[in-house]
Image (cartoon, rainbow, N blue to C red; front, side, top):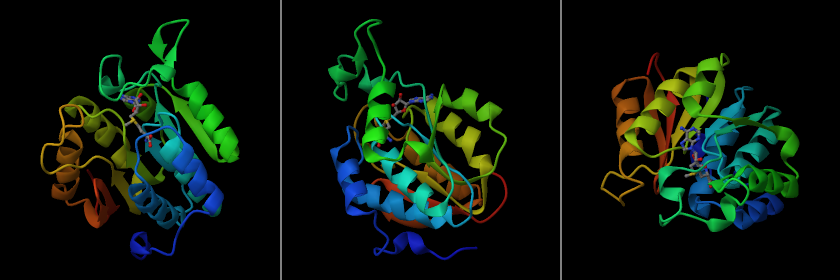
Length: 224
Ligand SMILES: C[S@@+](CC[C@H](N)C(=O)[O-])C[C@H]1O[C@@H](n2cnc3c(N)ncnc32)[C@H](O)[C@@H]1O
């Protein structure tokens, strides 16, 4: 099993990559982004793809893509690009710029593509456009890292865990965003926290590090 380099503060993206991350539309704070980046660099040493559930406009994808570039692996990112419940019109996290005026629905794919292009990271990323459980059902490969940052209902967070965590190899990392032991707000809720607890209680994953609401777990046993 590889060492706990996720806590190595010396592992940082290059200034241009960090600037692209900071300038990108999205929800991840910088300190959590750096923790995700360290986890991705750690997991990249396994030589397997790094997968994200919840692309949105590509903010966190930039960091996974740079870590993938360092390791010579691919970053995969899954999203239907229609937004989560809390991102729909009328909700706090809604951004009107993400609505496709022709069909009147959210479409974050164009912004995501522009973001990755501007960061010079397109060639390191495979965008999987679809519903996470459907994509997971057709995915047959092993993964070095799974980052869960998709829908925050119990239905979606549980499906993301059950669909993708089985693909994390021994020594690989499971990273979960928006883990709030105490209720945070109506929409972020505690589904990611319940998934985090389930992963630990399964005996298949052990905690490596925590940064605010970001938790990094390593596979240390079989199953989920
Ligand atoms: C919190 S945002 C992701 C934020 C992103 N990681 C960032 O750093 O800015 C959640 C994303 O998950 C997507 N999503 C929600 N449920 C999904 C599902 N079942 N399948 C695929 N994507 C989903 C939404 O469309 C949304 O773009």
